[in-house]
Image (cartoon, one colour):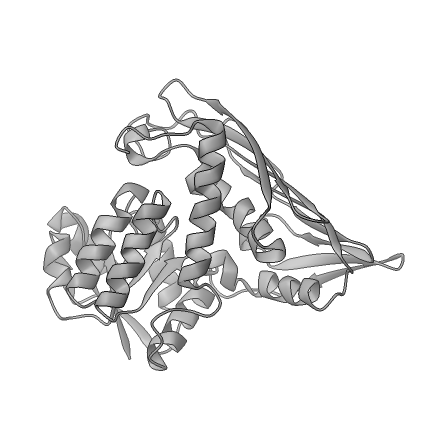
Length: 323
């Protein structure tokens, strides 16, 4: 039985805990929050025996096999490093770090302490995305020429101190949701040879929308993220022999449509729970077989992803006050 600890008791931690309850072989045993009352309430809700009013207490409690880190972006590196130095395996919510130096440091600490570390990029393990990558890789739609992916929702009415609109918390659309379209282009096409990008900024100083063009030898990806409107969130991958559409919201999709040889077929692949189940199962497989990183989403994948995001930020002038 793999014993889980959760750090941070916000919305995503709740979604994750509900899905963890659906997975055999894993159990939530410890919860830490900066408020002991919040930790206790969370622990009670999911039947976890231990609650801590500080993160350090959980890291040194010896109660868990792995810690799921669900705090805002800016604390991912520091908390992951503290957890790993105390000997804990870590599943860190995406983005793993705010920039490449942070991610490099996290991976170095994982290696020094010989512990498992993975970025919680849950969409990588989504059964439909796994299936579509298989179809792309085996040439079902021929040579990919075009990929389109977007992710946007209206958030300018949110609390300006909150994580989305606050520059001190690495707010803005890019790191929070732009990471998804970038991930899709990277998984299907690899690292781009050239990036063009442009962004608009909100009054708090965070970027509120970002358009990107990734150029490859024989393909282009057109990507978008934003917080000042909604978007369809349907992704398209088009090749020389056919096209695949990932059904909305594509990052947590349950199916895809294949258009080929004049035929259109809609395929429902499904998923378990909200979709975190598949990521949790991958972590269990890795831990049970003694792996220190996942083959499906490796340390190198996390480094490549953050490097691409750093490039986009450089081209658009997205800088955070603490950098």
